[in-house]
Amino acid sequence: MRLGKINPKKLWVPGATFVVLALLATLPLYASTYSVILLTSILMFVILALSWALFSAPTGYISLAPAAFFGVGIYTSAILGKQLPFPLVVSLGGLISFCLALLVGALTLRLRGIYFAMFTFGLVELIKHFWLWYEIQFTGTRGRFVVVVPHNTIYLAMFAVFVLLLLTTYLVRRSRLGLALRSIGECEEAAAHIGVNVNALKTVMFAVSAIFMGAAGSIIATRWTYVDPYIAFNPLYSFMAVLMALFGGLGHPYGPILGAAIFAYLEELLITRFPYYYMLIFGVVLIITVLYLPEGLIGLIGKIWRRVRGGHYAAA
Amino acid sequence: MKILLEVLITGLLMGGLYALISVGLSLQYGVARILNISHGEFIMLGGMTTWALYTALHISPLLALAICGPLALGLGYLIHRTLFKRLLDRAPSFAVFEGNSMLAAFGLMFILQNIALIAWGAEIRGYSYLSIPVHFLGTLFGANRLLTFGIALAIGLAFYLFLNLTRTGKAIRAAAQDPATAGLMGVNINNVLALCFGLGAAMASVAGVLISMCYPVHASMGLEYTVIAIIVVVLGGLGSIPGSFLGGFILGLVGSIVTFLEPGLALVAYYIIFIVLLLIRPTGLLGR
Image 1 (cartoon, chains in turn brown, orange):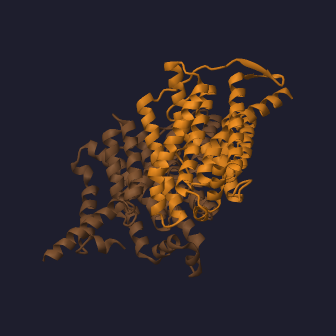
Image 2: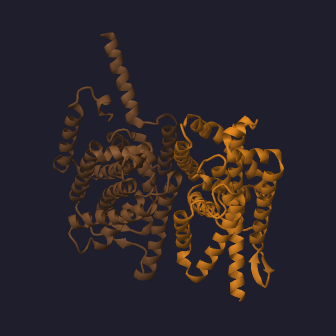
Image 3: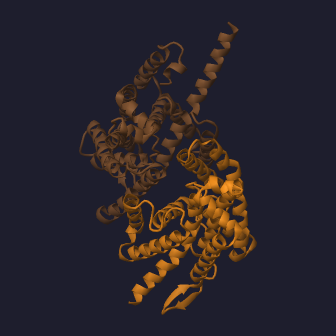
């Protein structure tokens, strides 16, 4: 949709994307372990933000549930990681999240606006406290150890999930499905009138977006090695996904990617030494974004680009 | 029988605090249309300020009530005039404003919480005030609990009377029903909305002072109280003041009964009530 406005020559963006993806895919061959680990975290946040945007950007429903699906993925890995091979565990993490999201979506997507946001927020906390009670009551421990997987494998798995998500986002945007989703965001009643099966579509897309969150969770759990319900179902991951996506901009898939990459890198720089300042910056940027950047960073870049190009044409 | 009575009274005492926390949020959402996720941070600021004043300067928590309330009122008023009013002016519809203001409140939450963490650190703080056991209906309760309950009820009642008997209260109620029409009738709508947000913040910080008299406080305690306030407000009905009190007492009772039966499940019970309620009756018990 915005693609045409941002790039003047249509092949730039796909070409650059391809080069970047190729560089990322071969990263373990030439980069240091530190860069591989850093890019794993960046990709994790990119997946969270982009999969959030997959459902929430076109429909306008603010979901605060990413942490729930992310946590489900983490626990899939913690419980099944020792018995099953890694790729199967990651797929199961996605699948279980998908099923949970299907159930939750079918129950709750009738709720509009603020009520949906509150519900999804409550969901994360409900799962967290219920699971904590269950673990202490029936397994007798608070946390679990997760099987360790080599850094390069973790990275490549994360990258594969990212590529799948990018492909899904692209296909959905290009298809009638994406159009139908956008029509829900513009006006739900009108969408229903022109024959969009509103509830089924919302539920399915909500569940599809949960697959990637779950998969990302089950991958990253193997790096954390120890998890408990407070770590796995931390509502912060929901807030971060939302903020990173909004900061980057929802008009184009590259928006959430850009926003997540910037914040994930900032986190890496600041979180260990100045954790409070990092979160403070987080809050300030969120408010600035809501106030002054309704279209996010990508919207701003588009605006500047158009102005620069416009000036060029005027001079010529 | 005695245990049952004790559980019920504990629940009611807790419910009084819950009600006070929720009245502020209900006011902010019901009139100013802001789902203020940063509500709990004002509670935290009230509690932490009281702790700081008590330990550093030996200022009584009762005096801290009179300091924190007006300060939070001013802060909330300013935040609404600078931040939320701008969002309101730009938003094409109420739905967009509700979404944006909730996100801005998230930002505010991060800012307030982390300023407190930088200023006071992450340690759990507490002080002892009036923790003398008192015989009440055959069981023992701390004097501080009874006092906070009394103050919470008195503030709630005073606020109810303020809404129903004064001119400003009438303006607030008019703005809650229809801001545009209220503006046409001569209500200074920007002033009223900012006042509502400020009053909500003031009630939160007063509740924070009361909480610090009974329980330990820390800089990241805000979110859990925000969540309780949201549950109570949804239970009682968004925007209904009596509903907040009813919801607060119900939640307090449920909390103490479940804690008595199975301590680990109290929070789970809150969320189950919340989720079932959103599905069956999102307008709440006394909502419009």
